[in-house]
Length: 621
Image (cartoon, rainbow, N blue to C red; front, side, top):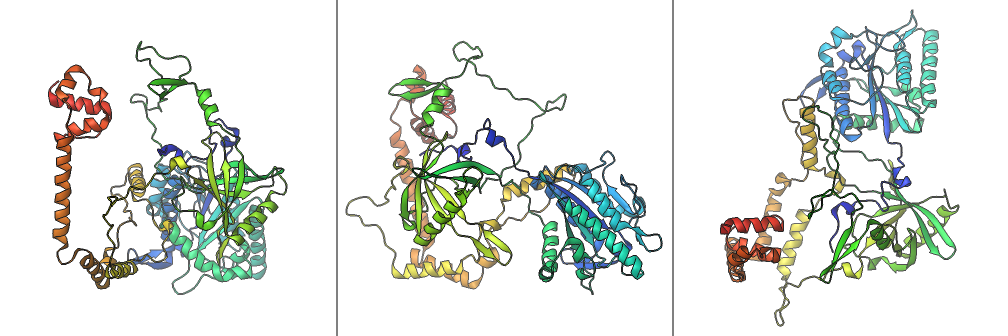
């Protein structure tokens, strides 16, 4: 069966003209980075294992944000960000508040998408910070100056753009001061604490989340209970897990994986017909998408503006541009049957888009290879049909309890398919939900789609080779030595895609060196060279090939090469020169054309026209 590569990962009913397809879930994120620029951030240092030197807390915060900005452009290109320093000598903000400096390129006055120019200028911030911005303590008791309060106010104003229903709004706060009002008189401290916490609560009431990224002193742990526990709204149960999770978050920000983050949108809405008079509503989600580089935009060489691509069909007989609707043809018994676009659409649509239950089968009847493309995850919805969730849960639990899967027929504008509905149990861990409960819709093949396996030893009287007990024992020992512990596909990033993003970043930011990318798909050479592994490999080879495995493999290769060449020489059964003279090479099949090319040591790649031209060139026509 031939599958369309573009159709394998396409959602069902993914029609650009469909109103439902045009509905998009909110996937934009507005972020303001708040960085404490007090003298304490520059004087406090910690050891960097990567560079084996002391780094200031200010440098750590700037490095994390710089790496996050570079990832934002690739991961979430629609996100908008702003960078705000507080406890600064200079001020730059629309509210004209002291001690707060919003860092943007000159023409940008509010939150916006990260650009290459912004990243390049932010990479140099440490060199120019003392001269252009400066550092000073912005919380002064006598003057009632409160730079933290002002920073929250400025950040809230920057995030006024858009609605919390259409975008996620977040503040990231970097600081190493766990008690910003600790040295003040009791009355002043209580007043400043109350007003600052109220400012944070006002922001949170507007749908803005505040995330603290504390930086601990080498000899003193950041004490979140002194002030920030109330600011970010932590309860007593979350305190013990907060600091370890923050440390991991900082590491993740410094070493973010370059990948596009796709919105978890509904791929389709499905009506599931269980029986006559009983239907429920389901939402289908696409859980897998192939990650590919972004599309390339073509530019005009003179104006440097994007080029609009238009396609026209030209008649091969007259050379005229076709104006009317284009018809398709399908060969049938030596004649071409013509179809219009509307007729093809009607041919494909053999039923409604409903999912119709046929029955149930034991789970052991479902084979792993009975899966034509990535499955669709189904979850109930009561939006249109009240009671869908309750019926879905009853069906879901019964399928799990009885170890059954449902067989159903799924129709629609795309080719209708038989599907298997496999219930998935909820998986939870200490950190929360790992896998949600629901049903995976697996696309099954028809009888026409299944191909018989070619038997290697199909001659009568010739028995297939069987491994000996010793060979089975050695193979088992080798597998145990090479077993991957806690394997998950989530551990492996696409190395070609990571290198593409690294090169794109280097060109955009004028970087002299290409960022090193880690290829997790390479074998573990150190592990493969361990004595126990080497011994297991050698014992397995000894059990299969005996004392001279090299001679065995070389002989087999020579025999295969000799047979292949002999077969090619015998296959040349046409007078290709005569066929070239009479123009009848086009009547041969691609396999017959490649036979001539192979016999004359010529390349065999390309379409049929390319192969014919290659033969004509070789003959001299």
